[in-house]
Image 1 (tube, rainbow, N blue to C red):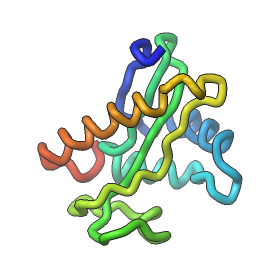
Image 2 (cartoon, one colour):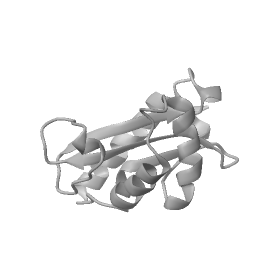
Image 3 (tube, helix red, strand yellow):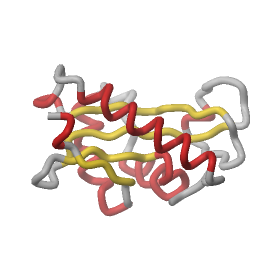
Image 4 (cartoon, rainbow, N blue to C red):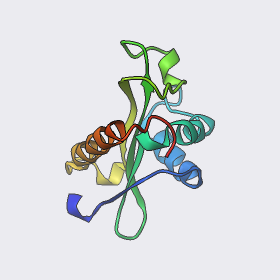
Length: 127
């Protein structure tokens, strides 16, 4: 099934579908809000990747932000620092119906490959 996934950068138009999957995957007090998701897409779009099925349905996503700090803190969860060198991954989510098939690992490999390219090309902000 991994070979059937298509990957692309998220846009704000995707935020509602992303939020629905986030809310189904995390406890309410840990899930990002719709506003947080929209903000991460706007501010750190280069670090927000979607995985889609051939029919265009959202299969999963992963996202993160950069920080100039040396560790993940509560504050880094809400702020993207484009000049940062530490990537803080916030979510790695696969639709519950598609879990246990290796999709999260495949998505993370794709994500990290894209992050390496983005950093090499000097992208630290939105894309």
